[in-house]
Amino acid sequence: MYNKTLEKGVIGMERIITYDEIPVSKGQSIYFRMETDPKLYISLVSKGYQIVKNIIYADESTTYVTGRRQDYKRTTPEGYKEYIDSKIQDYFKARKIVKPTSVKFSVQDLIEHKYKLPFVLKNENQNGGREKFLIQTEDDYESLICACEFLLEKNLTVLLQLPEDDPRVRINYNRYLNLNFSVQDYIPTPSMYNTTIRLLTSPSDDLLYGALKYKMPVKEMDDTTLLGYLLHEIYPLSTPSIVSNTLSGGSNILLGEDNYSDFERELLNKHGISSKNFESLVETTKAAHREFNSELGIICGFDYIYDYEKDQWYLLEYHSRPMLGDYSKRQGIAYGTKEERLEAEGRIRATALTKTLKKTR
Image (cartoon, rainbow, N blue to C red; front, side):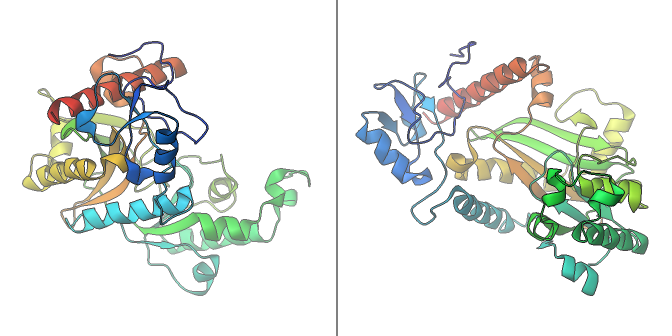
């Protein structure tokens, strides 16, 4: 079932395709939900492709693809994504799982008004913990104001010794800060570590993988961006951790194992992993993937954070193309090189599709 050469259209490997790029030959069937992109659906039918609109009619020769994710009400991929995000968040909200309260960041509001401390300043367009800062004290707040004013006043050529033709000098930092950033409530986790939970699911009602990720708060250097550089070198933050409500790196405790160390068992217990609250979280996650299988894809990683003061789980984000290193390691699949990661992703998606086909027949 799995094609090790990973040619276009390998079973289980979703592909975002355009109107001019069809990954399979005519006569082969394609699993495709019309609601995802009706214009592309009509285009495929007109070119003679066999369209499988319901996954129960797919078989091992069927290629699973994803359109550009826009429906007749939205004309851009961004608009469709916003529409779907709203539907998915409403689904979780109805089940008392919400995202941490978040508002759009405004430099003017930062200076003239007051965001409630502590809070997380995060660039919504950055991944892996980059440009996510914990603002915890009054000194941190003042440092953030100074860093933003520095960027707005275009002092880059002087202090950072950048040449005038450097692209970073020409950035409209007012637009950069006000459009990309949000202010999010800080969620205290139940230990000395920063922690999150990753659940990897498929539409087959399976939990493919679950792990508690943890990381010791450390003074990390986010010097890959100018704002990160300023908040470390020029106007340093006092908090020992600048990454919150997300986790980059760290260690993992796999869920469902038989042998835990005393440390691992204690940390899991602090998060109520064996409680009915957590069981409900898992069931809600699997049900959400069933409900939104066309939008989320054949696998999806959901990230949660636990507020021990309120005994409440929050949904941080979800990824239809999550990192799969932990799951691969558990399955004994190599995940080191780019080629190995591509092969691992194909195998995992093929496995998820097989599980889904078996359970929908």
